[in-house]
Image (tube, rainbow over the protein chains, first blue to last red):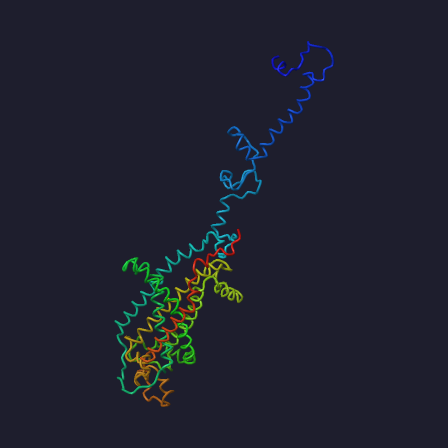
Length: 412
Length: 41
């Protein structure tokens, strides 16, 4: 009653005439409007998350019509996205793909950064610090040990005829210059390269971090720059000696007799280079070439796809090297190429180091008179007859009279 | 020894020469490698 009075509506008892503003009619007109307002009030929060979150809080456990969002951590539960509104793809799937090395897109110039996680890098790291590190170390240690044992058992190989005092020109200045250019650069490259692989474990504990840092930095730069001298020396040696290092039937005889290395008085004849020297020559040439390619790719990173190209070339002739070696399928990313280059470079380098250790041994303390070939270039005639009798015949044009097996010596 | 010394001199010349020629190529600075000049925001 008080409310009607307040609205100034006349009471029914106040008159019986037609009154368009009667309360009953007013209510009947406003009811549909009120229903519409109620419906709007119900639906607007359901279609507007922000307003729902900020002003309307449904009771706990109530089912809402919210659209799920992948950015909302609370929505990705048990690998499922509620409602399937945007597909059943959860955050865990996203991170799994990232972990597998999926490539996204970036607008900076370094497109490699589009790969957030390069999981092959972890395999590379484990390989480098695990089997690669230990096996290459064991290989070098075993080589040094074998040479020491050989020296202890066999001793220095002497010129049995005794030095004659007469010499024969064995290598020209150009040949020796190419050899020493290759040799000096290889020693620098070998030591600086070993420091890259083993220095942190072997050298750093001895000299300390503060000394190892500058040393490693200097050796790394030296390794980069001296490599070009090695390549030049390799080219000179190849041009000078390739014609003399083509295998022939005398090599089979030399190999069958072990080069006379293990038996005193056994001297298989050979030409300018015996089979052992030819193995070293081709090992250095092919290994050096491979080191040059892999080293070039490491010097100028992410610009070459040598492994992909090489393996693809083999696959054309039916050899699936990745499958044989248990490597990932082709093609490889530029980052993988770098990792494989690094591993391959280390393996070939250490094999070559072992080969050269044997070469240095037999060319110095292991054999009398051998160093003269690369020292002065002139070798003693008797040494030449014992080591390279066929070459002496070729140079002098004279037939060696005592060409018995007991009078020809092994190789340097 | 003459050949050894010649090879040593050649090695030094090549090493220094390469240092001059390839220094920039062999040591790319972070400002170049990670430049944002072509970055699209």
